[in-house]
Length: 274
Image 1 (cartoon, rainbow, N blue to C red):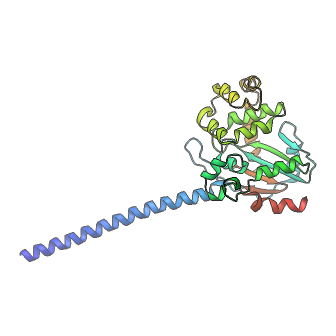
Image 2 (cartoon, helix red, strand yellow):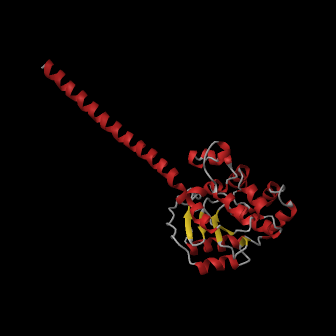
Image 3 (spheres, one colour):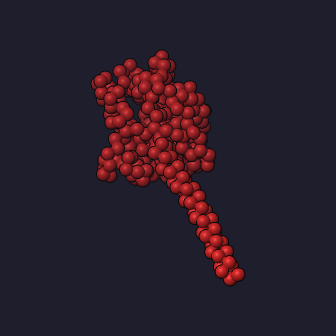
């Protein structure tokens, strides 16, 4: 009897151990799956809309080409943020959100954030090889070889005040100085941690931008709400082109979705036209 009880106890121990092993395998597989999903998200995140107010939305893949007539109309509309000669051989469009981390990566002005996002986005100044595309576009625009349009698409949820500030700044020919402040590491924190689309914080926004533009003018412009409608119209414009992720770029008739480096995604299109 004692032997049988011992045998039974041994069987029970083996069964319990097997049960615990199965639980451990299931739990391990779960966490491995979570880790794999996080890694894949970080790798693919340039091609998805960033998290907006706690909800993750998958981006619809952008079309591969754009109607040239529609593109020319975009550059011809002076109410848009257009820079350079619309008759240039090279036309760039950026669908962007100043609060979006991958838009900051593409902007090349937020080295701290680029580095934080991984080696594939680390700028040369920080020991990386990522060739941010927006500065290269600007060089061509400033050299008279290209034209550029900036269009707001909400890709991270806190870009409204920054977008209106850029429209206000454009009135005084100071789009780029304001753009550059907003696309810096301090600008990212200002939009996402301080202002957060709160229009009652127009004074905070104006103060932050005071090194680039008169804060009295900026606060007055923001308080007027004159560019509030641009948030909706720009978003609709982006949708009409099929741009649902930020950033999304157009180079002549070609779409490039995500914070793709200049060398990998743009150079081969542009170089033959220079």
